[in-house]
Image (cartoon, rainbow over all chains, first blue to last red; front, side):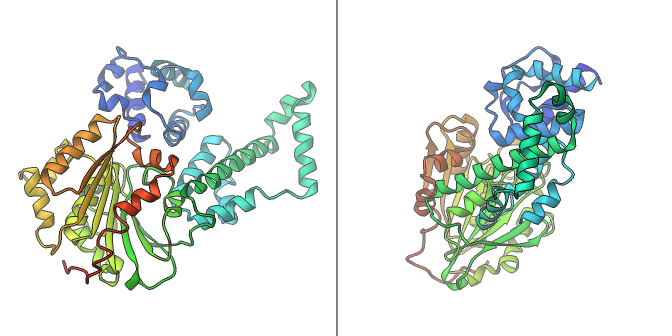
Length: 88
Length: 331
């Protein structure tokens, strides 16, 4: 899976988890291209969405991230790196 | 309840797997089930079990043993058990936000794949039927037992609907019909609408607009839609059948004998939801449009935390038309 494909899958996962920051800001394509980044704390992630996101990351890529870890991840592109490195 | 919980979590190896179970349970449990599960999960363990857990915790701190202990299934089980206790304790304490000393006595009955009824004692002739369209996350911006705890089970029965995430209610309700209009028309038989003293409809997020349309179709007494989508969004286009949005609403309202009191709410920090409320209000007669200050999309949970949700329900959908209490309109 290329980085672009991974970012595309994560963008879809964010929507599934009810995190609409990228969708509502028309920023999904820029994120997929790698030209846009944002701190996770900007994304208005509530506790349910955090759980949904981590469940999706684990189901799709075997990520061991749990909601408490998201604060330490930092940004969206960092999340992509964590998932990619964990999956490789 | 504890047997079901044990069965669901038995194979879980990670916190995320347990969280998936918790989310599913938060979407369907009643307040009584929360109380029961809380009592079971927080119950003091027997002394051999307590001793075993104490030994594991101590061993995990010893350099020689910590690695072995932390890799063991017992350690994982201990961690997940603690996680479960934290979750149920949080949910149990959340129920107190509704301001009731005792859990509401709702009992759940599954009517079909996407529809459940939560009901309590009392004759339907004296009760309100509250039809709820949950949003994408299968909830009304809060865990289902927390929502139910704000209602009196002897005065309200709840028809609870959920949708497949990728479809929305636009293509009907799974197990009922393949389009929204036909699904609403099936509610009469499904919920026995006419047996109730009054009918109200509520919806959040993706369920907001279907709630308004259902209220119009059934001639409900009142509708509350929070964080609703706009009918001008692309996903609704094919359902407009080339009509403008006002005509679309009229299509649903065509047969009902009365017009519901429609209340719209949105987070003041959500321009998208504010715009959707404006569009809906331009198409149908709306009683109130209320921005919730300090809230983004999940505006109802903000009101729960401020302990204002129950009074909101009473001021909007639980009392409208109560004084008239005329027979139900026939659709």
